[in-house]
Amino acid sequence: MSETLKLNICFGGGAELLFDKIKKREVELPALKKYFPDCQSGKWTIKELLVWLKDNLLRERPELFLQGDSVRPGILVLINDTDWELYGELTYELQGNDTIMFISTLHGG
Image (cartoon, rainbow, N blue to C red; front, side, top):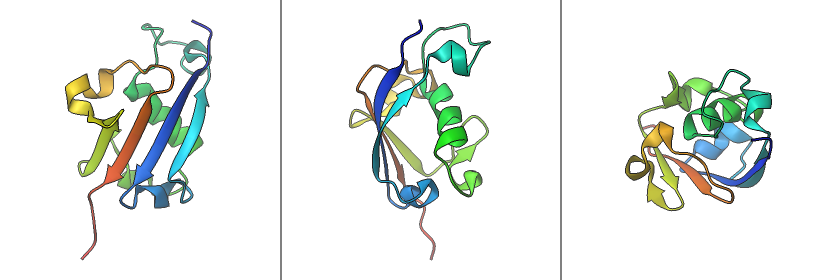
């Protein structure tokens, strides 16, 4: 699969501060094999998207967004306005024009 994949990425609840204050952005992911030559599935998943976000959009304090190969607890992930838990979380295969939203529920006090 050599096609690019267009997505809408949204950040809220303070998560946008880690991404240059971007609240919404359309992104075009490169062909999966170009970015992840060893990937066997041939399809972008949320797991690969998180790596791509870290490498291309995340500007500061990755530990506030990522923990291991997933998002940090306290970051709500929505796929087309639905909790990602209903879609299989990291294994969800991204579709063209999906909207992926990351909302931080972590607040200082």
